[in-house]
Amino acid sequence: MSELAKPTTLSVNGRTYPLPQQPVVVVCVDGCEPDYLAQVVSSGQTPWLIKTLAQGTALVADCVIPSFTNPNNLSIVTGVPPSVHGICGNYLFDVATGTEVMMNDPKWLRASTLLAALADAGKSVAVVTAKDKLRALLGHQMEGICFSAEKADQATLAVNGIDEVLALVGQPLPSVYSADLSEFVFAAGVRLMETFQPDVMYLSTTDYVQHKHAPGTPGANAFYAMMDSYLAQLDALGCVIALTADHGMNAKAAMDGTPNVIYLQDLLDAWLGTGQARVILPITDPYVVHHGALGSYATVYLPPDADVAVVCQRLQQHRGLELVLTREQAATRFELPPDRIGDIVVVSERTTVMGTSVSRHDLSALEVPLRSHGGVSEQRVPLIVNRQLSGLDPARRWRNFDAFDLALQASQQRS
Image (cartoon, rainbow, N blue to C red; front, side):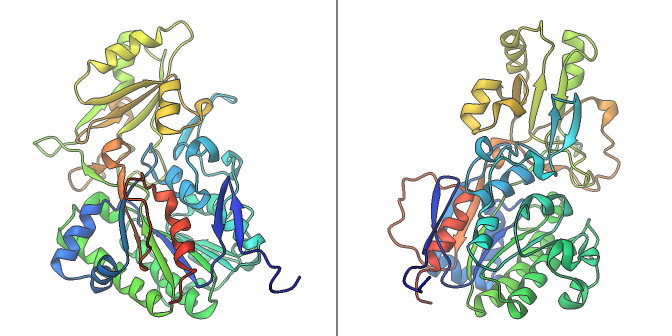
């Protein structure tokens, strides 16, 4: 095929994207609500971000609900909501087997990723994620480099498309409960761009810092200053950079500093009888030190003889719950796959989280007042590109899963 005949666009999941003309890096900063950036920018610690906000494209977008890691990362790399790609939480109730399982296995994915499609189109692709729970999903059917910071020491050519990652990055294996895990992602991204020069790279961090540090605090500002220094290096290497987040973060503590929790399973057991209903917390993942498996979104499976409308009405009367929706209402409002959510979806208010039963949550590892996510109160996230894009519709509802579209559009411009 001649150069003139080569395709210049790619269609994935009903969206058409231009193929990259410059190196493209899309960054998902886990837990980054816009106020984190506002606070650190005002402190003057992030020169790259200050310049980008002034000279590039700066939007505020909506993430998908539930505002958790897995659904949003998969929306970003597929360009579509969970109703299409199928990943509706970190965790779900598998009605086919009657078991509660993690949604880490690619078998739950119902759509192709843009990453895999770009690789199939002949573009070199690299993915670095902080937590290994995302690696298999992000790298599904993708030819290229894909590894996690959490298990960087175990990366092999056969499985990850790369080996000797620690030597390449020049940093030790980081603790999964540290800011170092995210820094390793950024450091790896810079080294990959310097050595392998991928056409497209996706970097996804962890929200360990955001769970512990509010916007503007020294710990938060230090994290974003670190991030800024690596993004500046990628920019200097000629990369088009799009930065967004999978969700925001809010304090979820009572005035005495204890977690502000509504235990839904205990409520429903009292109303319907013990074990009649099943509460699923889709925030659940292996990293419970972050949040104690407490988030602002839950789904409820009711017994066949239960009156869904009556249960919804009772829940709606409970203080601290912002939304109580039937399966059909939630699937429509939040663009969710109806077969993978319960009879009821419950969203708590900004300062409140939900648990199952008091006895099932070990909160002893929480060292600071709880900060968590999952609800509509954590839906607003940044969407920033280090190039100025003209002609964008100011009235449009921007989504975090527009990040690749904007970045690939920006890559068409002359640098």
